[in-house]
Length: 251
Image 1 (cartoon, one colour):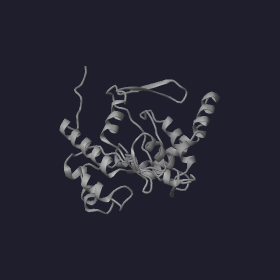
Image 2 (cartoon, helix red, strand yellow):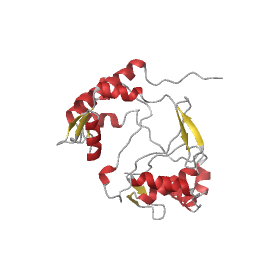
Image 3 (cartoon, one colour):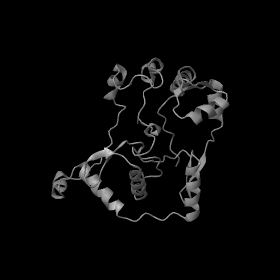
Image 4 (cartoon, helix red, strand yellow):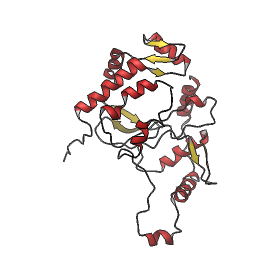
C-alpha cells in the first residue's frame, strides 16, 4: 500500500519562500569569510564586494544551480557499501548538528566541544539503529579557525507568511550585522508552536523510574555515552584512510 504524500507547505507557500530567498541572496548577499571562496565565486561571474566580503547571487545563477541538482542520489557508508537512496520519498534520520558545547560524560560539566568529541559522537551514532546518517555533530572549538564553525537550526513545522519569512528584517540587519536574537520578531516567535523541544524520555511508571535511581536526562545520557565509548571503533580500511587524508590535505 502506498500512502499519500504528507505535504506541510502549499505550492504558493513554497513560492513565497523561494522568492524571498532569491531577493535576499540577490540584493542583500552573503558574508563570506574565506578569501579563496570569494575569489572562486568572483571567477564564476558573481557580484563580489571584496572589501566587505559580501557575495550577491543573481536569480539566473541560483536557478541554474537548482536545475543541476539531481532528483535522487545514492549514499554509501565509509567502506563504500550502498547505504540508502536520497530522493526516494522515504524519510531518513540524521543526527543533530553543529553543537558548540558538549556535556562531558565523565564530569557532567558543559565545556566547549572538541575534535575528539566529533569522533566520539560518530561512534555513538554507529550504535543507534534509528540514525541513518551523521554530518558534523559538533563544531569543535579547539580548531585553529573558530570562524569556520556554522550554526544550523531545524524547525519541525513552518508557518509561511510575510511575517514569518521576515525578508525585510533580514535585509535590514544584513550579513554579519546586528544580532537577530534580541529583535522583537525573534522574541515573538520563540515560544510559538514551531519550536519543538527534543527530550530523552523515560517511558514507564514513575515508580519504576525511581526504583532505577530516578536518573535525570543528563545522567542517563552520560551513562549511555560511556557505554558506547568503551566499545572499540571499527577499523577503517587503509585505502579509504589514505583517500580521506588526501581529501583533508587538499583544503
